[in-house]
Figure 1 (cartoon, rainbow, N blue to C red):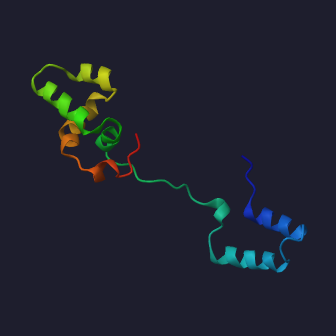
Figure 2 (cartoon, rainbow, N blue to C red):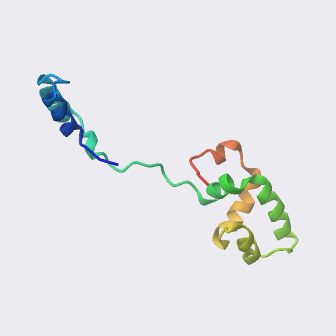
Figure 3 (tube, rainbow, N blue to C red):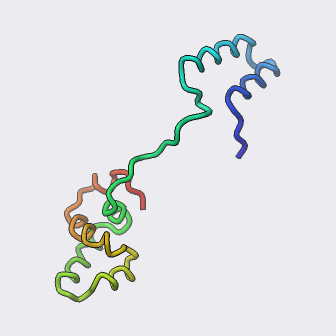
Length: 112
């Protein structure tokens, strides 16, 4: 991908006759009043709770099935980690909250 600044693009458009020379003055006036769009701050969403990422990836049924297995001591945290890839420090939170989660929880910015 080629990155070309908007200012450089404007100068080129003026040179080729696609824009009037007054466009440069208007652009400079715009830049004085506003931040230069070529140098925007890093954007991105906030980090959501880890269990919501797991919810988006695995869903609620997965948590329901395995939380029952945990309660009956049929599986331990290491086995669950091998099956799911969910680290032990996140397992309890996911298994407790995911079965009670709503659709909004999965759509809260968490991408699998």
